[in-house]
Amino acid sequence: MIIFKFGGASVKDADAVRQLSNIVKSNSGKKLIVVVSAMGKITNALERLINSYYNQLPDIDDIFNEIKQFHFDIVNDLFNDNINKEFSIDDFKQTVNDVFIKLNRKINKNPSSDYDFEYDQIICFGEIISTKIVSAYLNFININNKWIDVRDCLKTDNNFREAKVDWEKSSPLVLKNFSFNESNNIYLTQGFIASSINGYSSSLGREGSDFTASILAYILNAKSISVWKDVPGFLNADPKWFDKTEKLDEISYQEAIELAFYGAKIIHPKTIKPIQNKSIPLYVRSFLNPEDEGTVIRSIKHKLDLVPVYIRKQNQVLLSISPLDFSFIIEENISKIFALFAKYKIKVNLIQNSAISLSVCISN
Image (cartoon, rainbow, N blue to C red; front, side):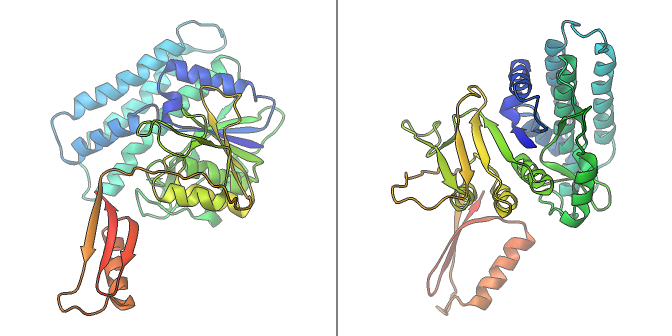
């Protein structure tokens, strides 16, 4: 069994969904789990909707209609010719509309005081709608698959927006829901989202779809994961900022997790640990050129001729802390400082300390 993960850029429009279907079709003889993110920049649009909902701003209906129209434009493009007489396009459009009715019902309720909770109850709609469209289109073109709501499988704590997976509760549910048989060898599900111990929607952290694929791979003992991107593989720099970039053919788990932690956007930082524990390789492959090999992340020996990697991380703040009385920055002081960072959910990206100062780089 293998796992494919497609990010937002891989389902940004109808043509992208068609390309996804081509990749899935070429692997349809294998046992396959397809993990899909929200379409295009819809997560950003939903974040604007959440902000308007939480603060009761007047533009909430405009944002909602924009999101709804975006998805229906894709639906109308994909299902414009009834090539499958057994598939009811009208029924499917009603299914999509029903999801938007639920979203509209949610944003017409008064928000609670917990922003992170409200965030997760709304942000999940991006993945739900996206996967319903992709799954239906695959069935429409006779690539049979089963849609799974990953919230029925992955259970987390109540730390909304950065929820921690309850592996003990999740593992049997994953094994139960993703049971391959002769009649079904392709499952399609969501990345990024899960459900809390109380049954509410939760999320695994921004860009967490890679982590979802890794969790499923670990529990189901997948042969490999392929993350499909709009780049040829893991590059040593972001081509948006650097003219000359070089593709890395292979990197170790340790290198990958360090690069992800410090800001490389190819994979989510939490992705590596589960697959490293079971030596499951992860391939970063080109969505536009699927025949290319891309980059493989696996257990390898360190090389002497390593290619330098450059990471540009924007919107960072350097915070320097030093005592007024020139006393030493000791372990007790550092623990108190980091307890405050944890309390206010401030992520520290870089640390440097000396005898009488502590400097940290945090996201703005």
